[in-house]
Length: 90
Image 1 (spheres, one colour):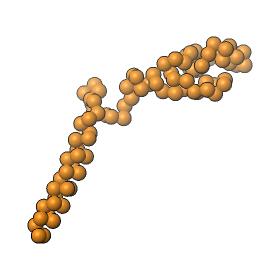
Image 2 (cartoon, helix red, strand yellow; image 1 turned 90 degrees about the horizontal axis):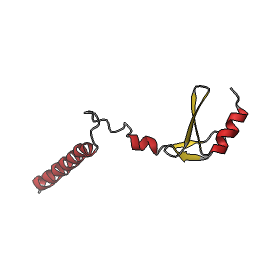
Image 3 (cartoon, one colour; image 1 turned 45 degrees about the vertical axis):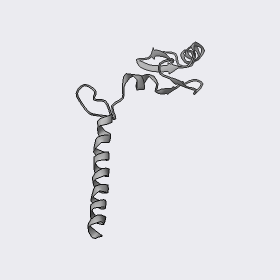
Image 4 (cartoon, helix red, strand yellow; image 1 turned 135 degrees about the vertical axis):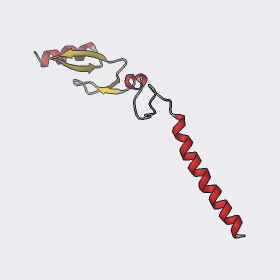
């Protein structure tokens, strides 16, 4: 009886160890490195950016990106770009 309990316990531990080990293989390798926390270009494009004028969040892929005073700003519309330029003359 004790052998059965011991074998069951060891098999359960082995199962969880193997499951934990193989979960790491699901993430794709990028540039030969297995860093799952690095962001892909698609993730960067879907990042939500806050408009500095109206404070609306828009995805980076559809935001209007302007270089103003050597700094990059993301806007939701041309009206917000114009309003920002009017409020912050260079």
